[in-house]
Length: 107
Image (tube, rainbow, N blue to C red; front, side, top):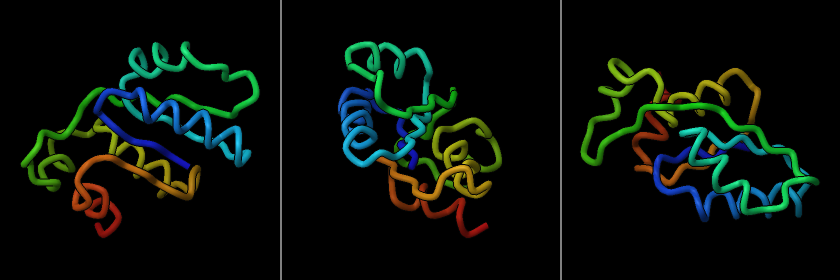
């Protein structure tokens, strides 16, 4: 399971830690590593399976998803989509626009 986001990670990390613990699943958090690590430090993660995957770029509100595919190759949504496409993970959750999530799956 993946969480991809470029917004502040407080609730994403909290939900990921809780979900990984309660359901015994591995979750990858995709985004700026420093922000994710800072937030993870606030939680007990000793019994959860979390992976942090670096993504340094982000989509801007109103930006066409095709632009991201051509110009921004390290956005959290593209990095997460590649993990799903490679079958490393099977679910992708994103707090970004739906069209940005769906577009990479149809190319």
